[in-house]
Length: 104
Image (cartoon, rainbow, N blue to C red; front, side, top):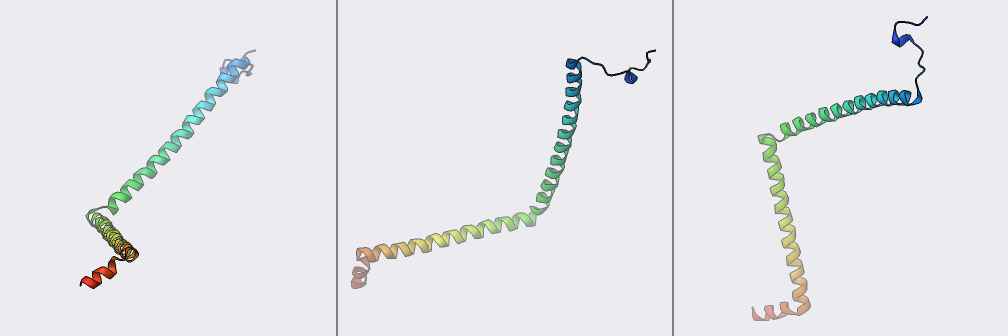
């Protein structure tokens, strides 16, 4: 006697239907996994944004601007020192220093 409940019947499905059913179940699992990964990435992104927002408040923004300005000044000083050093090398190679000293 056949049961009235379809889930209690034996699973004698044709191969194509069985493959489609398995594929359907796999697709749902993959979607659930990717949804979980997306939620985790979203939570991490929101936390990072909030941390950054807290860091770059008025005080944090002033600190960041001061660091950038200090870096630019240090870079400009290093360029000037390099230029003066190279100019001295060129002057001594061309013999210009001895002529300037004789004039002065």
